Length: 341
Image (cartoon, rainbow, N blue to C red):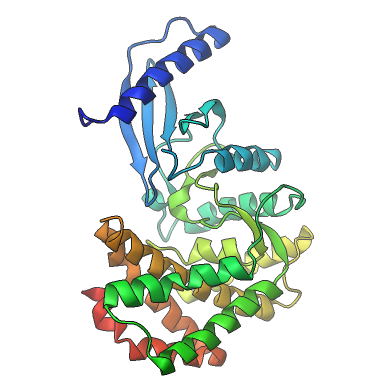
């Protein structure tokens, strides 16, 4: 750990106090000598550390204000737990300083272990957890995926990828194409039935755990389009699957959702179209976010996954004539060479 990391020093003092109380309450004896190691980091300002001592393990979240706010994590953690979803148990919290002490859901994400052979079983578990929280009543004080949020997300693409990364803005023709495409994607999303949406339900945020999966990174949850999370699960930033398998997984989810009265589209092909368009909205947003992380936050490694998202978009454009203008727009940006540079 860096010697000048004053925040980490404050975190360690707080952690010692919380563990002493936790050990006392549970009758575990004295807090043992232990190690504190980096568990993971992500594209935000949050950091995670793993505390390990004499067979016990905890995760400590460091979410520095004002860049991060722990309260949504705490609130949505409790909400998902009521649905039986395996989310972290919060042993201690200091919302003002951005410190949380959590139980350890393991050190292997789905992304670490998933392959062609075990994907069906792992995704079956992920679908079960998704269906569980999609059945929650929509009565928590969560934001909605409204037109303002959808448009704000889409605008990350021209602002950060086109202007900041490619180095130029849209001309008048491109802007007109973009406006029509954006309206189409937003209208499709708003027309969908609403459920609780995790917003980043992908293998990197699912832990191989018992019960499986452990679910993380849910603090940005909203009420929004029913296809959002299931599309996110199979069209991931870090790995891609054959279209035939994705279709089968979508069909399995759609069948189960209908059986449990989750408000999916009554016709599977309508559901698939909504999923395709929802995916394109997310892909454009993520391309913009990855460019922002590179150019604003100095983390260029995320840009290496941008071509994957353009490939997802290209596949959908090829089978959805209503997105022909998006294909024309992307072709005009010459992103094939720019994205891989």
